[in-house]
Image 1 (cartoon, each protein chain N blue to C red):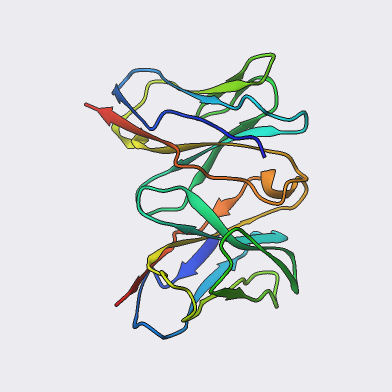
Image 2 (cartoon, rainbow over the protein chains, first blue to last red; image 1 turned 30 degrees about the vertical axis):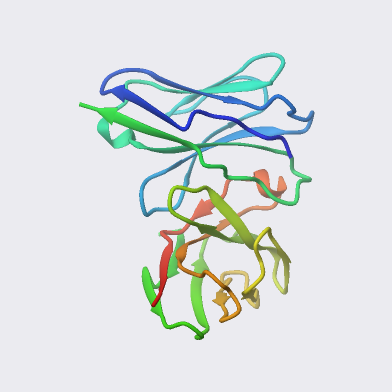
Length: 110
Length: 115
């Protein structure tokens, strides 16, 4: 399983674009990159998943460079309700688990 | 209204007692999972099941047991053998087309406190 490294915490302000970068230097050919969001005392919620280049949905964008050794979750125009922990996960369909590390604690300020 | 439910939301247990946490899903998912989360930490996999009547141990299965008699249900029993059971327990379900990388849908969690 590829190990991921992401910042422990980040602060930003309402209305800003927030970019959270995740490093995964030993990502394997079959690995996908997945991001989840978790609010306090709730279960995580899927945000976005990608394999290469750029993926966009109604919530976020995921940028993956050609070497796939990192990825960046981009949240446009954040609000106070985006304050949460964001997890970057890397794994392939044949892995026997997927690892939720400590994530990045994002704090949005007014 | 499709989803995954866990009950109860809060649970208190005396030391030495077994307790069973409920998890039900009506998403028609093949796979179900149990995770444990301690304060400020990530999620750790306890057990998962890809199909009815089959399940596999995760990283921290000791002191826990599960059953998967129905596709919709995956109860977790925390036994007295679990040394430090106080934690937040999360159940999830997913399809199994891409194994663990398929989107996992989580329940609201059960917070277990051992008194």
